[in-house]
Image 1 (cartoon, helix red, strand yellow):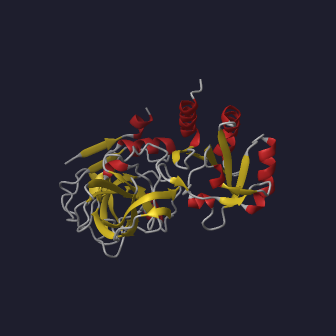
Image 2: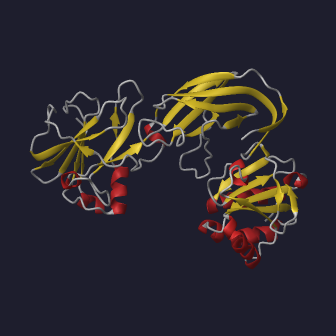
Image 3: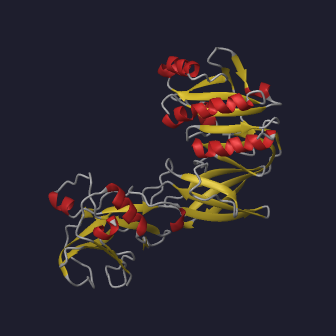
Length: 407
């Protein structure tokens, strides 16, 4: 038996191509397995509920004064997960998952929490990060990993008894798979679920050649949704479909392309034809031959506003060598506010507006979900850099310095 004991007192110490060389599509089923090390544990599973039936657990821990059985029902197709939750003579909270669904607690992981179960947000986060997860072995699907929390802040239960026996589950739902195509190995990652059942609208994917998946601490990771087109070394894939429990993802291989357009590094920048804030015609293709910096921002975005002085300084340094184009992702009612901010903050370059309430706006086409995002396009029209936030902005300035041999 693994015993994990904790005391709060101790704790406080989209597709457009040219030159398309299409091959016959090939659908590849990718078997996905659980991956506990791929991301943080998040409090998405919510609260558990009291089980009202009689006790059925064998080999319960000794020294228990009172206990309840809690449960969580993730899906009608899966068995209910039962959890022993007791208080011992030292007034400590004891939590044991029936991780293998055999109703026997003999060889299960035991979590012991100290007497203080008041909610202290920062301390609880540190505590949850420090404890090992338990592997829940649902029959017939990849395992999931959970961590318990007995520290209740703001969940409102239907009954006082359930509230007194509060138990929240921190979750980690990640899948990883690999496949080969044309003698090249690829790695696929899946995340974004809040239960063993993967909702298609929440699923996020990452596809790249094997051994090149970036570290999860990298803020610049770009993920894909279902039906997304993905280009890896001029090979086109579509993430086509997903099984209910995330144990299989079907990827369609469409063959090689000579040139591919998109919003990611290595692709040619997607065409942009619109009007500037000064109501002049704008065509991104007309800037071919120069470096172009696309800056995605919005008047609602605090980090974007904070970065403006650095962007202005960068423009003063490289404005005669790089074409600056800011794309404001905003609401129509903020249009005048946007123009005033551009003038007041001396953002003396080209400015575009894209309506956040319009489908397939410029930000959508470039798959921008993090603001501010900077995209650098080389004179041939290919994206050579993409980053979000101040940390990646520093990387951008270093890259420009290397291009232009600046001191």
